[in-house]
Length: 108
Image (cartoon, rainbow, N blue to C red; front, side):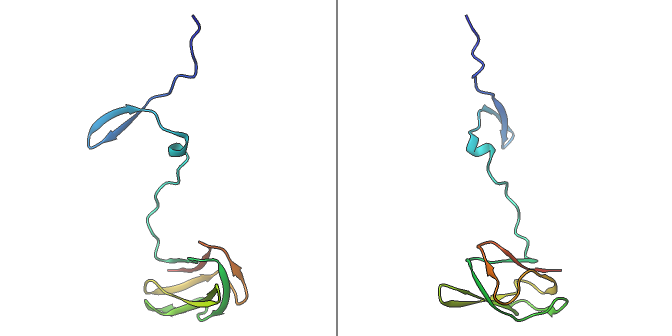
């Protein structure tokens, strides 16, 4: 008889100190790993156009300070600082079109 090389490759998974032997799907193996939220980076939550940048690089900002205005679907969204800090980099300028999850502002 011939051996079948298509046999699944079992992997060990430990949950609550109990070992399980199982196979993983391709979707599970190619999943995006969890990354904790970095509040010093401000991303766009919707695609749109930058209408106005209200801060400059190096500016000290407090939580809630208006950073910029993003127009999307005929509405102007005000993007505010999530935490106190110093603006270290602004990655957009007035008139730029940005995609969803685009890094707009970096803070220290």
